[in-house]
Image 1 (cartoon, rainbow, N blue to C red):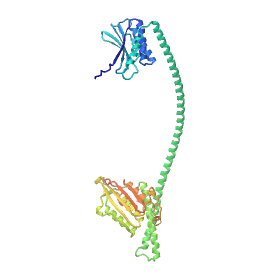
Image 2 (cartoon, one colour):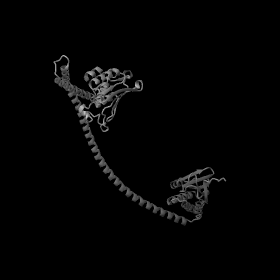
Image 3 (cartoon, rainbow, N blue to C red):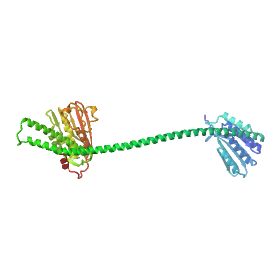
Image 4 (cartoon, rainbow, N blue to C red):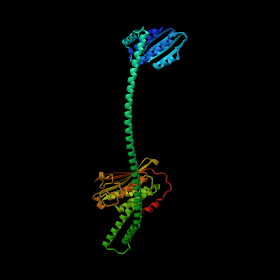
Length: 470
């Protein structure tokens, strides 16, 4: 079964307009139809007034009719069409008035017929209910005849209703204005309070910034003073300490005056203390130079075989005990590295000596690996030991200057607490990173990863750095 589509337009009625009485009926019919379609009272009066003005303007035209249609597409609307023959056009005043009162009023002339189409949207959704259609059609037909008195009475009632509605709207508007004024006063008071609080906050922020700037200046001056102090003390101490160490060597050298056992022991203690003090002075000077930016970087192709051989020779003679093995990579397995040879030596010396001091049994191992090829190669130096290890709660402080992990091993191996901080500072100067992992009783592993160095450029010679380090 095929269902025919619902028509888009429903014809309601056609009114002939020949006399003023017909115009009265037109007005009342339009009012009743608008009410039946659910339009608000003001819209009912507007539609009725617009149609009566257009009808009165066209009275006397040949074959003048007004057709009421309920349109459903593209949207629901009540459409009233005025048609007449002849060459008389509607006045501009009547069209202008109708256009202000209704949704649309349009005049057309095709040479034979004249048409004015008035459209007013209606509040309907979906298909037109047949019962509603009949209700609107009956409302139109109830007013097919009317008198001037009836029309005047209807207009008077509409006017009174409109005045009452206007007065109610004016009263509502007055009430809303009062509420709005109260709200504005509250908003103004709140704005004033917020502005005052914001001003106080800004004053506090300015004061805080000023205080922070002052603290930053004091910290900067303190840091500069610390570096100057370290430089001064290091330089002033280096000469007498070197003299103590050198004289101790002369006293114990072959060919010097004979010494008994006790004298040799005391001079050995003096020499050992001198070496310890000289190492501390050197560390202080190195850290001061690193923090003040006075350490230049000389990129060069480093011979790791020679560097590690010299370093392990010094460490074995200074720190190694019979119960600890110092293991290094086979020379043929060492990769090519471009970095600062002096700074790399200092880094490895600090890490290996630190590992040897706190390893009583087992081994200290140095491994060198390289990831990538050519210009992208990153070199990693790993120093691992089987020493006492570091508790987890101390790991956050081991890179603080002069800090040493407390424990019984400190009584035997006292140091300056500068080795790890200094090694990390030098690693970062070379563009690398230093990481540490450790477990108490198991040992410590430190990884130093260096980036591929740039093309070597003329800089401070490494020999000058070695002289400054001595």
